[in-house]
Image (cartoon, rainbow, N blue to C red; front, side, top):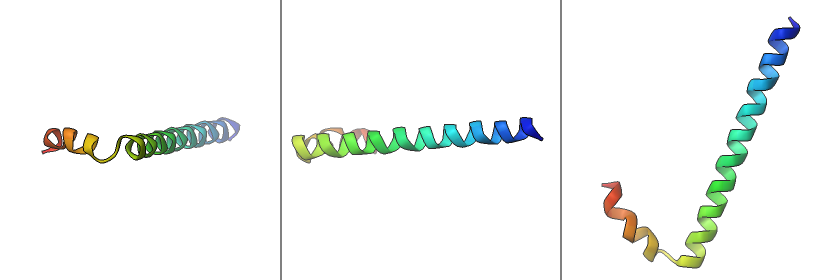
Amino acid sequence: MAGENAMCRRVALLIVLALALWGGTAAWLHQVLALQGPGMVWDFYPLWQ
């Protein structure tokens, strides 16, 4: 029982870390876009299609 609990805690920690990293990346990207302006987005837009 203790092993399963530790495993759940480890998985939960990984999920929290992944979400924090994703949130940080999104915030950084938002900051960069705010500084650079939308022109940078349109430079990369053809790559998305």
